[in-house]
Image: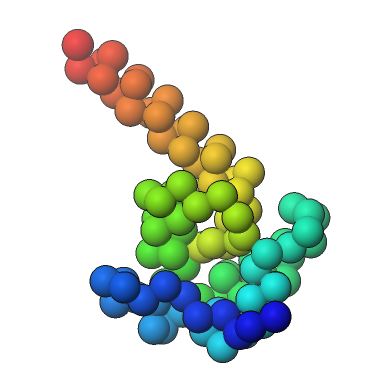
Length: 92
């Protein structure tokens, strides 16, 4: 598989990503249980949060982005929706 090159269009943070040049298959594990290697790379990445937000904003469905699997990103999205709804209700 090809080396990992994060998307760079209008993403100034991508050029400093820890995954740059690594085997992309690391970030697309067959199962959630096999994501530990990718998560270890992400844990050391200086742009981990930028990458995670990028994946959440674009509803990226595959791979590990910003240290989170697809299921983990879905949980983050649901949690944020609940928090927004609670804040809106509290403001009413």
